[in-house]
Length: 267
Image 1 (tube, one colour):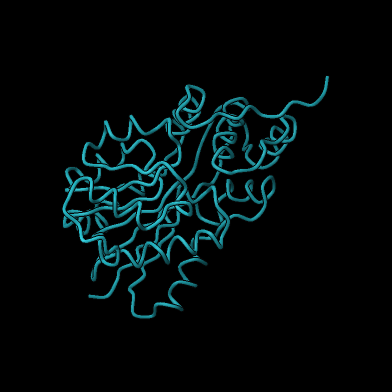
Image 2 (tube, rainbow, N blue to C red):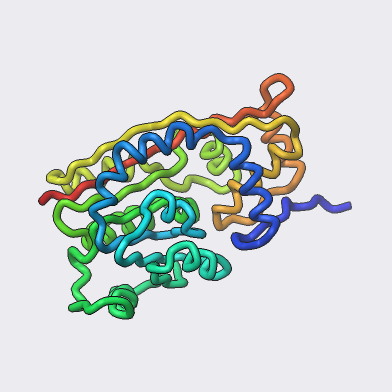
């Protein structure tokens, strides 16, 4: 038999949901991330009139964290998630493309479908968020996204980014199978050099994923790799990687620290 590749599970499918739920049941990262979000981010979000996110996914976390907001614009390329996203967030207008393929006119038109709007995107949003969708892109693209989103923020507004830390073991796995992706800390440093008047807060929050068997550990690893654009690895290669790097005694434990950066525009 020829070597088999790990099955790819696209977002919005039952296979993807099964892997996601397996991950959510095995990670402790939210025990650290959620209190930080409540303490540092929610006070800024609650002042939000217009919200912008690149990659809102299903929007479930927005509903939990934001509650009601006047208008949200979500750039979500996975069409299978749109019905769920708008169901969770009725005030969200969704643009079904990658951010780099979305024109300013399209963003302005999405706002105009809900509100009177003069079409000027500079300063149009009170809060912005970039999360999981960044995993799909290389470092230079992520930098362009930060710069573009920053121009759309109003004075005093914040932009929030939360991603796996460069030091996490899953990120090490990305580098092995896919190649270098991004480093959020480096992105923040580069941004700060160009925007010295912005306030930039960066923190690394601990997290880990613990699973009891090799099958589940490989499934979660495959879930993580599905966030990259590369071809899935061979089953044997991924199994060997997981066994070598994640096994601790009778369990599979993966360090999955989260890097959180808040960029705040000067008043």
